[in-house]
Length: 139
Image (cartoon, rainbow, N blue to C red; front, side, top):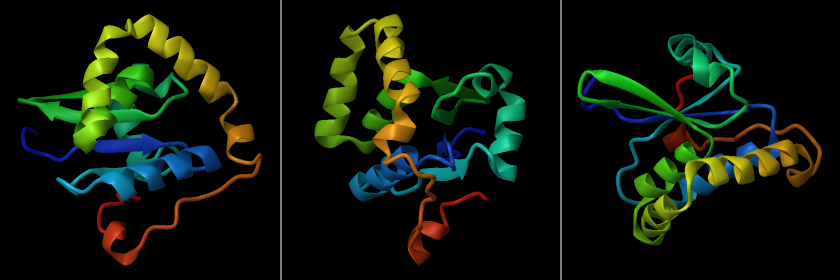
């Protein structure tokens, strides 16, 4: 598992989540190896089956391998992992986010998540990947 690129699972039926994926793609200028899968797709379901706690949480899921172990981060920890992955000012923001207790960050995440369908315009949406980005999609 070590050396495998990270994977971001997102809600494939959520316009706000689709915009979040587009944001990550637009700001991924360093590594460009992050893979994507919707929670509802075959690849996302397979990953979630390996991480029942992540499957039970209505959240983005950041999956990476540290050594021989795969870990799944949800909510605030997932957002911080995304920021650190992006690097630059986003990475600094992710590092600074370490001063916010996870419990507080998760509460804020839950508020945004509860309203994400309204924040996304209230309509379902999907991510439209370019041909180059499509190679990074697992579904």
